[in-house]
Image (cartoon, rainbow, N blue to C red; front, side, top):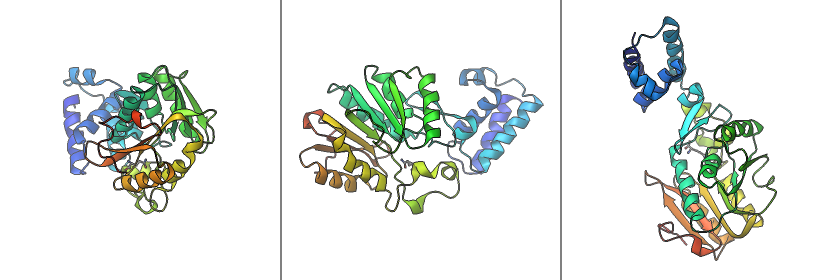
Length: 293
Ligand code: GLN
């Protein structure tokens, strides 16, 4: 069987299982089997797979068909143009979380940002992406899960930002050693009753998804805690789930009556990022799009 045939066959199987992105996923599984990059795959399409390679590929396809996410099978996921190690102890980075990085960079380009804290860093995708774009910033990345911190450390080393990011195991803001200019978080915000029991989501750590009763227990707890950790020009950026942005902004308005607060929709039009700045000038007109206060 040639690589081209293997690719087509894998794709057909994944399509028949109603797996979205079947083309991309079959490519990733075949590339992982052969340990080759995308360019090599397309150069070698006419090459024959060995019997052993075929067996490996069908084993990976069988795992995918049982619901395991491709990112866990291959151990990799792309985020903000970088490749990250992932394993089943961390949430797989989502494309919509790139918005959190973009909004943080927006603010960082409008005001001096020397210190940043990312709370619940998981595999470290957000902190590492920020470190690559803000080489002068000191970044603290916390996570309650020691195994997530281990995976984040691998990613810091992989991307050459181990000196920019201090990884800290602990709950929320507890391990922070200093005040910070920006606090960023993609905390668990899925309602406890909505945690997937089948499919890719069921393979992810519940600890990274479960936001309690209405999904917002952790997010609102962080909102209550941030004021003690802000520098005078502090900003908070939160990723939230569909339909949660209004609740979060109202809650923040009660805690910070004179701050600027904004909601930014993601590419699907879902209100995804809530931003708050103590000093209103730092939320520019574009960011204030959709402001609720
Ligand atoms: N966006 C993720 C999902 O819907 C949830 C991520 C989170 O809880 N922070 O599966």
